[in-house]
Length: 52
Length: 309
Ligand SMILES: [Zn+2]
Ligand SMILES: [Zn+2]
Image (cartoon, rainbow over all chains, first blue to last red; front, side):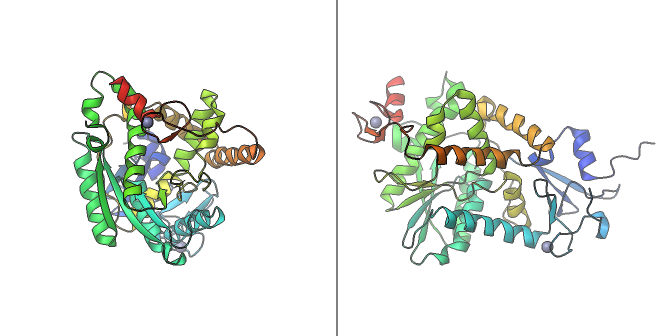
């Protein structure tokens, strides 16, 4: 079975997203793209909309 | 990355060791929420002080769209302003009249100014040119960002003058500034590059300042998120027509591969400015023959737009 992405950065890469264009919360807390993720973690990816 | 992975698989803040919320690729550094907030506010304070963007007694009109940049700008200015005795803020929201987009951001702007206790004023495109943006753009959607930019600048300047402001502040960030340098270079438009400077020079019209010009866009979003100020809002429906979107993607790719690129672009602009100081690059300011606003040609952009309708 595919172990899935080990870090936020790997997850973003798999989705074709730039670390610079999103911020990511792991279980409600903001984390850098180097943070580890596991199967139970709730990940929220927020696109940084341009402008404003 | 070289940083030790700390508690719960999150790298530690390079200053205090608490779990980091952001990685700064240009400095190869991790920061926790507390230190990110402190660094962003220190950077803005330093930008304002080094360039003398604010003077004691200034009445600063902050263009508040309700989006992330202007929200961060208002929050930060409201915190650092006590360093300038007598300086005060008035937030101005321009309602372009974009269906399905503006209502949410206006609500966000109202709730923020209420929370910060800052005076808030509204001005609409209908006030300036008699129509909202959606109607102005029928059949010319591709010009959206140009038309909107011209009118937004005019609306903000007029409302700021009416409010008795001495300076207009906008939320342009490092990414915006780097994109502008690149776009102007691509167009071969050096004069425009120098006109976008945030120096307080021309006595004729309200100076425009960009206190967030050194702060990366991602840090602004993170700054708001860690303090509970971040609201997810719809993106402007006209964004897809923007040339800037193309440059933004290109620059993001390049910045990822070569951290520091955006800072270098802005530094290049400053070098050019220094080299051109006193040189006749700026076109002489004239007055629009129809409305009298300062402009570079015979007719200002707003009057030209009015004629094209
Ligand atoms: Zn810290
Ligand atoms: Zn005019």
